[in-house]
Length: 236
Figure 1 (cartoon, one colour):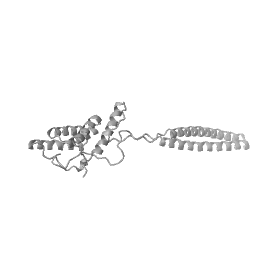
Figure 2 (cartoon, one colour; figure 1 turned 90 degrees about the horizontal axis):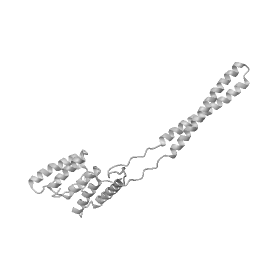
Figure 3 (cartoon, helix red, strand yellow; figure 1 turned 135 degrees about the vertical axis):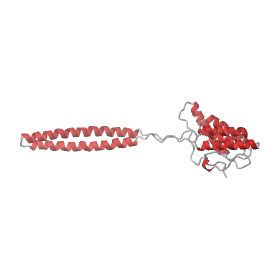
Figure 4 (tube, rainbow, N blue to C red; figure 1 turned 90 degrees about the vertical axis):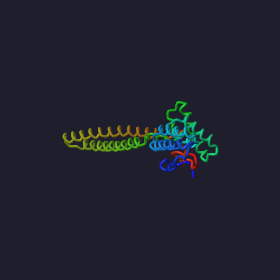
């Protein structure tokens, strides 16, 4: 069985420590740390695990402290705890996963030292870039509609001109002229507005950002152990 368990599935409790008194106190402190971790109170969890480690310096608790530091966004402290865990447990079955976490924490630490404020913790998800496509679609759609309005206005303008030529009275010519003026305004507004919106839509489409590259702090694809680590032995 893998030594990693989801917090919601934790059913083991610490075994006996150095003395019965220490064991009882360590169990209580350990339980407080687990409860704090489950409620995302990682600072309290870290404090509790450190207190338990002071009573019984188990390598497993070094892993738990590393996980708490990882969630708190403290890559240097997390690296130190992970490395301490591997040093104390050279034959750990999860060595490959712990070494992967160390690599991720080191990459994050390098980003922070380089002034990159976007460095992510190992459990963070990189933010999705804001898409400009919806705005481009909207501009192109409205622009196309305004061009249709311009076309209708142009057709009405030509019709008004024909009516003006064929009108037999002054009143009919005035009516045709008024209709032509209104149609000309409609055509101009449609053509100009439609052209501007189509141009804006094309620019927004061209500015659409590419998919965001995977950050150094991004967890690689695949299952990621979560929660704390327990050891099924006489130590915890």
